[in-house]
Amino acid sequence: MQTILIIDDDRDMCLLLKRFLTRHGYEVLEAYNGKKSLELLETVEPSLVMCDFRLEDMEGNVLLGKIKERYPHLPVIIITGYSDIKIAVEVMKMGAYDYITKPLFPDEILVTIKKALESASLEEERTQAAPVSSGNDEKVERPVVAKEKTPNITVSGDYIFGDTPVFRQILQQIDLVAPTNYTVIIHGESGSGKEAVAQEIHKRSKRKSKPFVAIDCGALSKELAGSELFGHEKGSFTGALNQKVGSFELANTGTIFLDEVANLSYDIQVSLLRVVQERKMRRVGGVKDIELDVRIIIASNERLWDAVRKGKFREDLYHRFNEFSIDIPPLRQRPDDVMLFANHFLHQTNQELGKNIKRFSNEVENIFRTYVWYGNLRELRNVIKRATLLSDGEEIEASSLPFEISHFNKLQFDKQPEPAATNSIPTTINEIADTPRNVSETTLKGASIDAEYEMILKALKKVNFNKSKAAKLLNIDRKTLYNKMKQYQEFNNQ
Ligand SMILES: Nc1ncnc2c1ncn2[C@@H]1O[C@H](COP(=O)(O)OP(=O)(O)OP(=O)(O)O)[C@@H](O)[C@H]1O
Image 1 (cartoon, protein in one colour):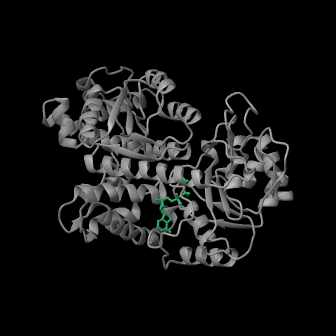
Image 2 (cartoon, protein in one colour):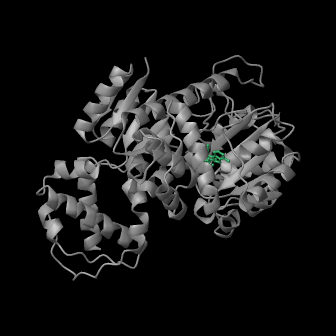
Image 3 (cartoon, helix red, strand yellow):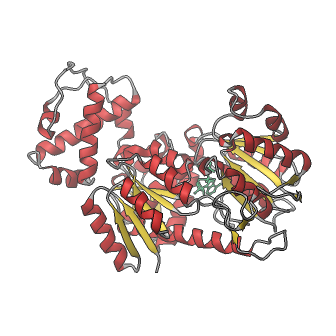
């Protein structure tokens, strides 16, 4: 039986999730804070972790880092409020498998859990089947392969090619560089499709039938990065109980994709330089050189040259890598691509959920075209997944979108009179509701928070400040409502 660890300080939420997941055949463990969860993880390795981002004793990113340090392969799903979308993007960069936003929907939880578990077991099968070049048949540990990093991707139909100028240009570049052995740098924000491009390069190359190994360097701890990438010999350091084949060896004859490469430490960059220059490597603690024939594709969120200028990335390595580069603009800069992807994700989700939703309403299309998509394609995909779950008719309506998105234009353009500043700190919901705000309306964040505040205030007044009823009216859970109230307080005090 697969075991899921739920980490949430909201005990009601834990209980609900536990009941629901137990009914679906999972064994469920609970921890009500970060510290307890880490204690539990000392003795138990679950199949999956679901973790609320906002715990009282620990931020989700800190906890995620600690979990990944101990179990680099364990899929972690982060639960966030929708207004935390930038945080969601951050945790994805740190190696979370995926995020789900509140309010939680049973079908969405199940689909995400199933996918995460499937991808973890696929990964396990692949690494178990990997050849060990030493000829030694001792037990071999597997390397980190981050979320959605699947080998030998040939799932045609999962990736689409659009007909907008930006897409055409990216495709041209892929076609140009794919047949060569050039190292490629892909620049783009998180979720913009860097790995999708790397996979496409691999699929169109002579190496297409060989492994494609994707590593999220941002999720590798400083201590273990060397052994994840290059492997280690048994006993080479405390904890190296078995010999381990690293990602480079697994990718031998194929392609390795190093995401967030600027996060690698200086020492690892030195070892990488050797791989690039001599096409050879040694396992940590090893004495034998291993010949490598691996094509390297790297990706970075920030311009790699900027990392060089800041002294974070070695210049010699940068020049070695910089044989060809592809820039993927963020989704907000390519509005013509949005509906193309939206329709593709709708089709995918219909298949996943056995639904038959045909289109988006005109209003939704307009919203999609103007929204900022901080999390790029990943955010678009998740929004559509959820809206599909919530819709029953033939069309996806604006009411199925998260509040922040459906009200985005309003939040952006509604100007409200500047309220008088106040020094008093409200402590109750009623006080908060009666407190004038001093949030600057000139910033987007300020404007969105104010508009959201107005909406929550209206809801609270309507139900005579009954928080449960207000949360229900707003289609959010009580905890999210409390968090938002807290956020207004903090904002007001800035
Ligand atoms: N051309 C495409 N066709 C279909 N789906 C795509 C395409 N490009 C990206 N996606 C989907 O968008 C999501 C994000 O893409 P991807 O993981 O490649 O982004 P990324 O830039 O590598 O993100 P990160 O830096 O956070 O790892 C994935 O679910 C991916 O399947």
